[in-house]
Image (cartoon, rainbow, N blue to C red; front, side, top):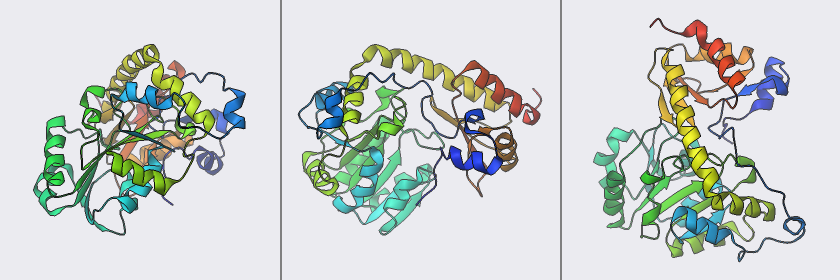
Length: 326
């Protein structure tokens, strides 16, 4: 089992700081998540039904009907190696570790972004984050389309994890959904701040969606999760306001972290900075009840967004001993 951000209880126990006193910046989840409406009693009392209004809402939001709801994109990540006919698989590195973990029993080839183009013709499949977690690497839609075409001509697959793309939907490949050889993963956990609902979608050709559905079994989404997802996907005014707010906050976070002397990279929901003193900074912050993501053995720190002005001030104050001179 891989370790991820969000292990707040473990940090609280380790540092003997009550849960309520922590500023948790260890995930890239929107701190101003979608305001969940009341859940109908039927959602708790009946088995979920596929012919509710979730798929129409998702179709309108993503701009395609080539959609399979899943219990978070994590469920699809784990199942894809069972249904895709790929053996030589390139995985963007650094990247979301679950992709590498899922393909570990195949001919796995970790690739830096700059090495993908040269390596592509020796691969059956390629998985990339877009934007990538944790370093924020982005590719142009034209580049991704070219890689997809090169792979698809040989019966290969391109898997694009778009978990963090909702603030920049113009860069999504969702409009290409349904083409052979292309799989797009989307999630309501980050932009919508609904990680606990475990809602994701696979945008892919019908044959692959059917194979995944068989693999994952019936009722992949709980009834309450379907209700919440349907409301969130249909709420265009909330999405527009949230997109603007997160874009502004992401730039604010990058500006703050730049004062550490590194070059922050990320997206509206998180920023990652490489620093020689990364371990010291992470430990210093934890002692003050601020949790960030640190990769042992790598000089990387990833920061999510504070959700309040006191949180912003607390983070700035805690980082101030490490600020470089202007």
